[in-house]
Image (cartoon, rainbow, N blue to C red; front, side, top):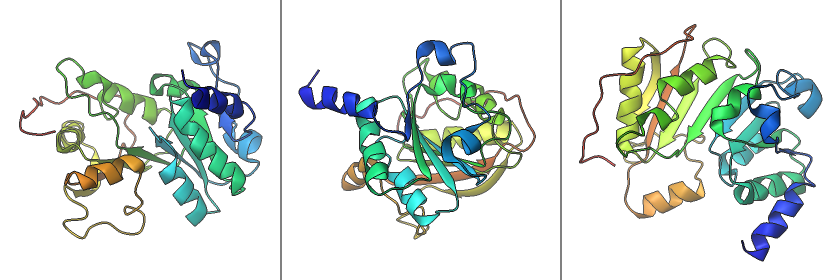
Length: 239
């Protein structure tokens, strides 16, 4: 492990805006912040928006700057990446931006019922290999996690370079009778990207340089708590 990475891990321990729960705080138990993020972490009663797979926190930070009356939490497992987001938020005194280092599989241990008002999933691993479908962040098992902490009708945003993941998620939506609020398979090519969708992460910048179209979906789970897998097979021509 490089010295820079070790230094970042050490500095992460000093950030008030970065929560790094230990394994025994989230495995088959609930973290003390579950259900208490507003009062115990942000110190206000503002709505909370969560970004999954936030990386360096570009989206979380940009949204926090634009909407000071909303709280934002970026979630990722990579501590070295989260360091950048947490450090920038600290330097800019963005008190409405926080970061959480944990696996998405443990997310139910961190957020309580109807605690989160909106969810962003930005450029997740599309898990294209055979047998990895259940690992996709829009697979039924993950939607059940989200249903446990999202308010009813809360929007879920999926922004990805993977046309396969985009279409798979549409199949999940259709199979479960969910509501699609917006859908586009090329937000820049179709002039669909507004000020919010035009926020670019480091990954997105790389994908655009490669000429890959950026897709977008917005949907909600309604009142559903259980979800079924669609009869969807990968198209080998899609990434």
